[in-house]
Image (cartoon, rainbow, N blue to C red):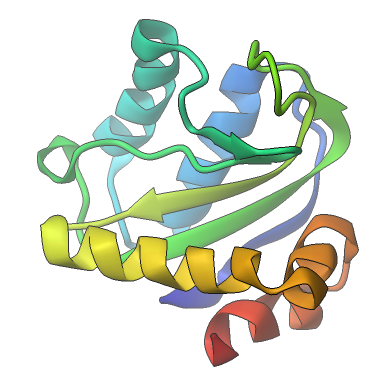
Length: 143
């Protein structure tokens, strides 16, 4: 569910839109979605706001399967500088976990994988602080 090439450990995004697009591009680069899906991820932010900022410092942008998802995949993007997305409680965001799911079942499976990582304090700490690709990959490959 996570390809090593879908992990970006230093992203110089200057805006939330650039950060979301980076998470989407990481998915696209490993064949999990197309350009339309990445655009839909950004459009969801414009249309619905920062609903996907799910925990302090953590965002999980995604789009609907029919908007260009090709396979279930997680991307992980660590921002060089945290960004404000407009969430009252969880800004600023420093880590984005992009999701590409082709149906409800794969969406639930991806969310379960993320929840497993977030549910353990030690894993959550690594997710939010590590800049090492192998550490971040290991979180999602063993959860």
